[in-house]
Length: 300
Image (tube, rainbow, N blue to C red; front, side, top):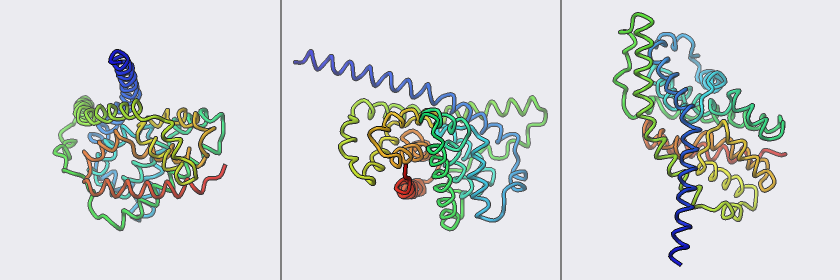
């Protein structure tokens, strides 16, 4: 009896270990891209440059933020350091959050992987990108009326250091130092989040979830819950989603693909480390409601 238990415990621990390591291996390259971009923004981009290109109109600023994600191939793991840096540089909260929500979804790498994962179906790509844009624009506009400051936990001491770097070599050194600091501050949340996600994947049975998701609303909620728990990088989540094609409706698969790239265990911990708690929970509530409603409108 006890021998069987030990064998089961060992095999589940090995499974947890391999899932944990695979999440880290998937996420670390994108975290590195995120912190390097964050370092480049810190050293090379001045507040004046951002002020010049950022539209003053709140609706245009939100749209600008949402569409800027096309240019940043950052996973949701790496997007929070970039967003935090942009907010510290004076980007308004509503534009920064719109960018944070769409960048892990509407960048070309993610859309291409979605296209491939779903057997070259453009409809899935359009639904995923379209719902992501709709969610971020609606939330950005709500936030523009609701909050006046950037909602970050603490001002960054390094906010004005770029004035001290004169030569290109000094600037590159400053970028590297900043990226390393950022990597270690974000990395600990990634490790905790990856461990929790691996434990949930190991010990929560998929069959339990399938039993709950019987109608449109509950199946979308189940898939959003699953996306949160699995904490996949947005570059690979479409391959997991497509494996549920025969079990779940297209709407609930889109809910999985949009919600998971906006909120999962590891980036929730990173958000809580960067933003005020009340703001984070309000933001997640908005995302849940709008993604759920959007997923119910998807027909396919």
